[in-house]
Amino acid sequence: MTVPENWDKKFSFVIEVDGLDRAAFQKSSPIEMEANNVAYREGGRLHPHNAPGLVTFPEVTVERGSTDDYDLYNWAVDTYNASSGTGVVPPELFRTLDVVQLDRARDELKRFTLYKCYCRKWSSGDWDNDADEVRIESAIIVYDYFDQEAVA
Image (tube, rainbow, N blue to C red; front, side, top):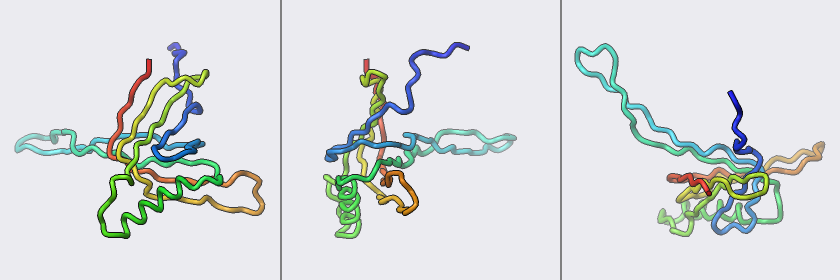
């Protein structure tokens, strides 16, 4: 088996989020979709029929070094305010998030666009007086669906 020269490199990506000035993330969990399996039986049949059911899109976790930028935290606070208020979710809470795959020359290869995103959870990261690494903050992003686009 020959290895294609156009494998997408795992380390070369950027994340763009509407309304966030600094969206330089160190890590992102995978973007996934999953169809539930619906099994049903027919009389006299020894095994069930299978068919696709509801499609779900698991949450995405993003991580970055802690900075003096509060945009990600403020987005999480907006979610908290919307859920603890009147129950009416303001449309500006939802944002579009793009995960952009880059090649070695930093040109765009692919774009994954996640629609109707909100920040479900934000974490400051942990502290340790014996450590010398950067504190990593993280956020869990919920989205309705995504598209993948290849860039020519």
